[in-house]
Image 1 (spheres, helix red, strand yellow):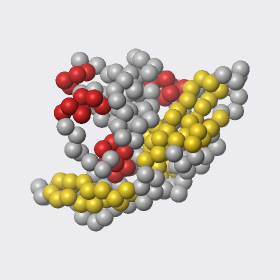
Image 2: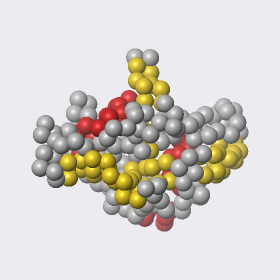
Image 3: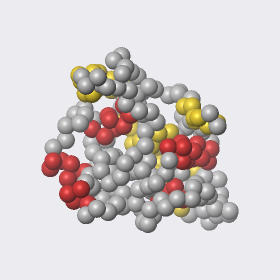
Image 4: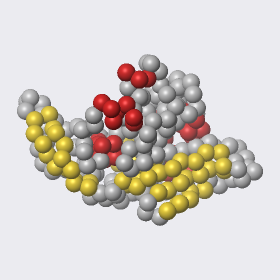
Length: 231
């Protein structure tokens, strides 16, 4: 599943009017809405601001050693309030021929990392933002934190968006309130937004399905990393 840092899309109808991007509270939240030929809203995506931060994470290195290390996120970033749903993904990436899921309001599954970043670029194009990724046969390159297009979070951003100041320290009772896990899910994927949100107002950051991020955990580097590099 995708829980994208500044991202998402919605339906492209043949009779659709230009898509509308509305900011509800500048700097705090954002609502991206899409309209059909009658002007009715067909889909909307709510995003919530996660502030810049410096926080500690425990890094387990390849040599078997581990230690706490501080990570700095230099800029605030907007994150969709729920993972991308099946309906949202189907609307903008109909060419992806995989079983995305059975319920329109469930998080999308079975998509590749490239499917995810192409989805981000599609949404950016629809609302008039610069696409965040340059994709070629050789791979994909992110244009960086100064590009306003929708994108995947970095690993470091995901950690902070998920746990906040208390990275990785949720207890069993707290996890049951915010996440679908083995003990409460009955082995099935659930629609988004049914559990309680976290401190930022984000739903389903833990549990239910796996989520793509842009980068990966570097088990060799011991230097302080910024948001454009992750951890």
